[in-house]
Length: 113
Picture (cartoon, helix red, strand yellow):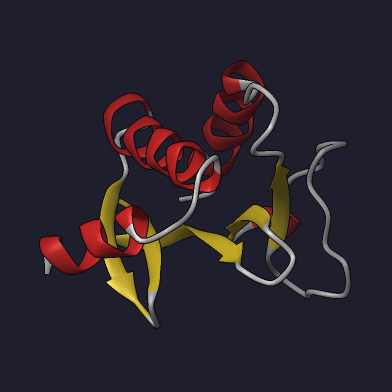
């Protein structure tokens, strides 16, 4: 299963590959989430419950993190865009990721579990 997840990341073009690899490592190492691949997408779990997934659209090159219980918190960088429960956090692969902001969002969401 791990090689399947690895293949998802290594087949992406730069700078998207590096951005997604950074997010993956940040989620696992810094935010202490576990990883599984489902529906051809990396999913992240907290306390064995679905927490978030990272999405990359190869046509638009859009990257976002979708938080399962995102609707339970308010944050100016989380967007519902018609979703009832999940909210997304957009990532620009050509800019530095605000890890402090992302850590703050994740800490608030972990309180919901």
